[in-house]
Image 1 (tube, rainbow, N blue to C red):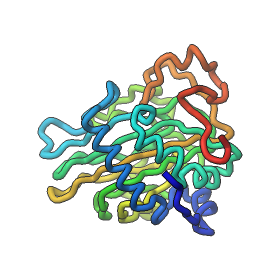
Image 2: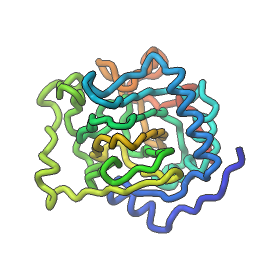
Image 3: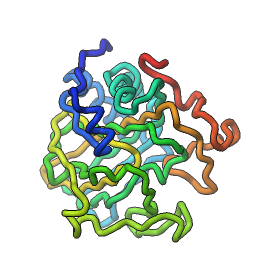
Image 4: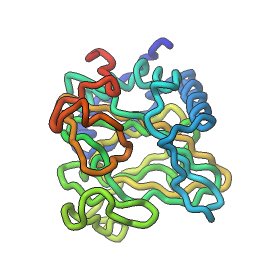
Length: 273
């Protein structure tokens, strides 16, 4: 797959560094979107042991997630390695290197009511450091009511307690060790939100500490999304005494706490590779 040209908007890097979330229009070309859609359908037909249904049993739709399948999915591998994403990640992170962290499938079938509550991603992960970026890329049109919403500037440093989405339990950091989430939707003047309707080929890029949430989808809408996550120069292995999301079995036997993420699971890509 040849890499189509994508010109990063002039203000994108500064906006990303300030707000922790930006929209990128047309970062994937139509043929790449088609390839990604094929990869998603292949993933749905061959779910990994990490796959989960994140919606309740009485939900009229279904929210399906899967993780870490790019090495067995050629379409995912092509997007992660050969698209404009590594070069864009390098620029947004202010990093000399770009390392694949993991892929994440998120599919809300028509009529799914399950909302994704406000949260940050990094507290669920096994990495420290501030140079990182996630790309959230739909292969279906996503209206405002079903897109990701972000709290501008929330990546600045505060880590909030990660909790399970369906029953609000703290199963990672012990209760009381991290700040609790504020009432974001009740205080719009204090927590400025960003959100964009998206078309196939568009992406939102966001920092792993940026607070984000999304709603359900209408009975007429299917929302298939692929997330690509990258790490930069300062990323280090953070060994956790619990199962991270996603987990990387056996990694702590190969990488010490605080080590550079140099492992076959996390290859360097793009011009930095």
